[in-house]
Length: 216
Image (cartoon, rainbow, N blue to C red):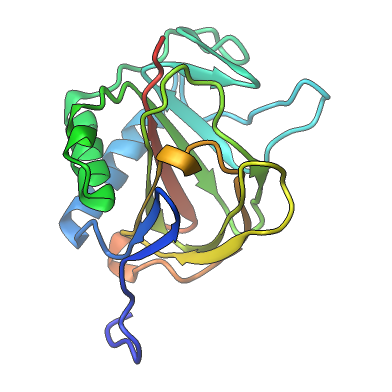
């Protein structure tokens, strides 16, 4: 929004979990969107994720560096076209390290060797159930960038998928980082707000870029 009645402030949602509004400026958002559109092309492009029980995720996904499938990592798209996963770019790792250090105030985060990106595309009907990012071997913080439509991001506890949790509105350009005691907290996206993306971005829907350290 151009004018906020109450300006959005940086907020620690839980120990080690920090929301930083508007961390990405308009230029960087456009650059990331251009890159995401390139990565989404096949081979090893945007796909529908199928769960072991036969269901499908409503958010579609493309991976960089390592290919995630429920619930492991591989170097090829084993649940799709079996093409080699697209490489993880150094510049994206640099961005992730800066984001983690800025959000957590921890200079040690600058040494995190980010080597995975999971990029999820949400249309107006897409959701993400409560889950935790537990398939990595590294405890390094998870870095999340939002582009396009705003959403409700539900950040929970480390014990179960139910309460207590906190709902946070994530808008285009927002940063969310979680590490330390919150690294394995359950989280999800119960709602997307269609039509809320910045018009100048040229994106219908929501993109979420999640950076992780594999430890593999």
